[in-house]
Every structure is written in structure tokens, then in C-alpha cells.
Length: 195
Ligand code: GLN
Image (cartoon, rainbow, N blue to C red):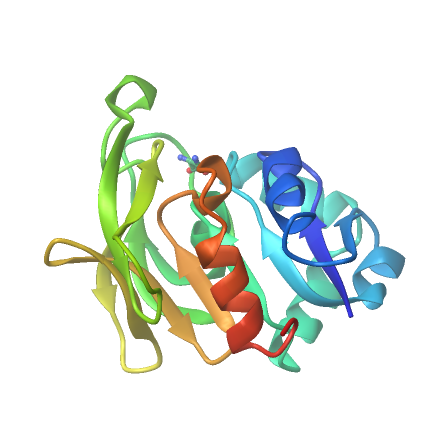
């Protein structure tokens, strides 16, 4: 099965770099035809307003929504999590993007602060063996509320920083920006895309 990374804006090379160490075939997804080829998709971090606009311009909004509703496994990081959220609490950082609304969470963009307030913190991810995962947070969204349709999968202390709803996962941090492959591998194993 091919694994894709939505490649319109953001940290696409970083996701592809990790994935090429984990699976045989990882491709950038820019068009509906690319999307039709993949059996799992990664939504990268970046700027959610820009990514939303580019998804629309690429004619990908409808096809993506349909694939996700039909069970496409998705791992979304940071801006990707924002795009999947059921609800965005208004942020202090300008206009919020439209969302797919498939993850039952309420999040607020940039709620940990600006770029210069980026940080790394240990994150406990359910199902990962070994030490806590090095979570990189860059202008990350905060998960303010987890609804009954989503299950927490990652925590920083008491705070939930990752959730899943079936094969759709959303993480507030950036596993693609650490050299630790465990989150990508674990997600793909869980959804049956490798192993
Ligand atoms: N703050 C960004 C947004 O709102 C997300 C940041 C990131 O993906 N690193 O889209």
C-alpha cells in the first residue's frame, strides 16, 4: 500500500523523510489522482489557513472529505489537527480556516504562544514502548475539549495533546520533526498499513 503526505504547504519533506525510513512507498499528494493512489495519508504541520485554501484550489476538499468518511487512515499533525477538528475556538491570531470536522475535539490555534515560544516536551503516547516521545510544539493548537467521538492517545503531563477517532489521528505536536520514528510506525501498524 502507498502512503501519502498532503504536499501543498508545510513540513512535507520532513514527513516524507520519516516515512521513507518506515515504509516502501511514500508519495506527495497534490491532486485527486494522487489521493486515489494512497491507502493512508499524513496531514503535515504548517499554516492551516494556507493549507485549507490550497486544498480548495487543488480540488481536493470534496475528495478528501469523502475518503476520510469512507475510512481512510489519517495522521494529522499540528496544522493538520486544526483542519480535522469539529470546532475551533476563536484564536487571537486572525481568521480561522474551515475544517473537515471529523475529529470530535475543540481546539484553539497557536494557544501555546508564538514561534519563539516553541518548545520540546516529553509526551506519553499510548502503545509506544520505551521512553516518552520527544514532542516538538511549534505554534501548536491546544486541545481544549475532547468529545465522546474521540479518544485521547497522547498526553503531556495531564494535558491531552493527541486524539484518535478510529483510523483518524490528530496530534498537536510534530513527530516528523524528531528523529524518532515510533509515532509514524505505530500509527501505520495500528491502521494495518505496515507490518
Ligand atoms: N499555528 C499554525 C496554524 O494555525 C499551526 C502550526 C504548525 O503546524 N506548526 O495553522
